[in-house]
Image 1: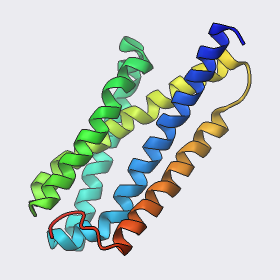
Image 2: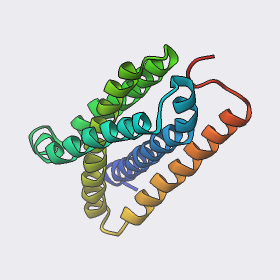
Image 3: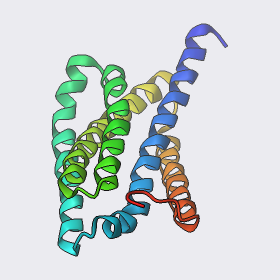
Image 4: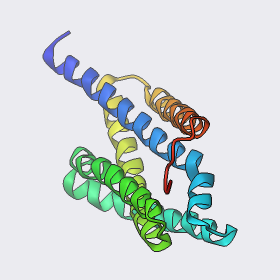
Length: 169
């Protein structure tokens, strides 16, 4: 395979990894949400507001991502949003670690924002890669997301079973 073909395959692998990491992040948060609730002493309403904050951030990210991708390109945007997703997830966990509801909620809005932008840009990059390959690969990318959710759910379940604290000890 020539260098161009090899880079298209490497691109495909990178996009699949982004889909998997996105799924892993999403499911690992959801899998630990009951523990976060317990450790924060949050009410059902407060947990709903955590989810609402995540959703608001996501919608804003989804709406604004097209302009970002058009201006900077999907690859550059992903180079910012993927690390931002990790940093904001850690910040939300740190907020929960200290038992501060606001310091958990605010970063979750940015988790949603990062995830929404990542979602659009990984799909745009996947579609571009699909065109470069000349064959359908989007179902495999979405399968990678699903495999990431399985890995995230299993990781969260294993952590819970092992009594690994996610917030306060």
